[in-house]
Amino acid sequence: MAVVETERHGQVLVVRMNRPERLNALNTEIRSELARIWTDFRHDKHLEVAIFTGTGRGFCAGEDMKESLEKGRPGGERPKMADPFMSGALEKPVIAAVNGFAMGGGFMLVERTDLRVAVREAVFEVSEAKRWLLGGYNHGHVANLPYPIAMEMALGFRFTAQRFYEVGFLNRIVDAADLMPTALGMAEHLLTLPPASRVNTVHMMRHMRPQASAEQQMLAAALHDHGDKNDLMESRAAFAEKRKPNFKGWHDSEDRYRLPTLDSARAKYR
Image (spheres, rainbow, N blue to C red):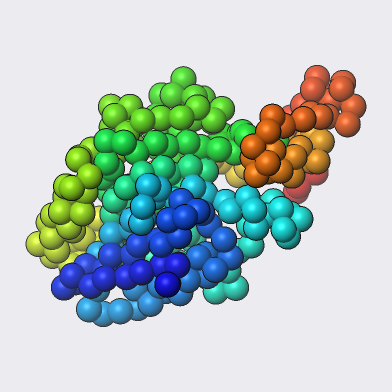
């Protein structure tokens, strides 16, 4: 059984993650297969729009914690082949058809799409705050959401599809039976546009999305190093073992009051 399945509907490619027993968690195999499929899609002259979805109860549960524990390092292994969907090199529009849980790295896959439709039961979570030393500070900013909602996302609260629709993160919420017909209908609309108009407009809109500044990213890098990094694997072990984590926080308890600043980050990373 392929971990990613594809279907062609004329000029539309459906890309379906297919590890339902693991809620389509991102292991090395599925990351590598997605990189290959997105590369092929990018260069296929007969395909113009993609729909990205999952099999089963989950769109994607994010990082495969069991694989991370087996390898002894967090974050998962990136594929050897460059992934144009993740890098932003993909010129063609992608529609997310969110069939269930979209957590952590799975949320980030939805975030990279251009249009989004979800079933009413879908649940979303930006999980960095639970797994790293810095929460998902940039996701609400990229989505152009108000500060308290962006803060809620960054601190790992869960969102229903209805809430995400209300704050403007989703284009449509539908019953499960209408998920793929709605996504295909959106794709068919895109195909009615002049090809250059579709490609150029998507390209321009992506460039208008807010981004964290270079200095803010330096500060984020410093904060990723500020704390006891044993907590990274402890969070994953606790998840896999279904127990409460035993976090340390800092090697020196006074470090909570010695947070990196923009000036110290500049000195460290420039």
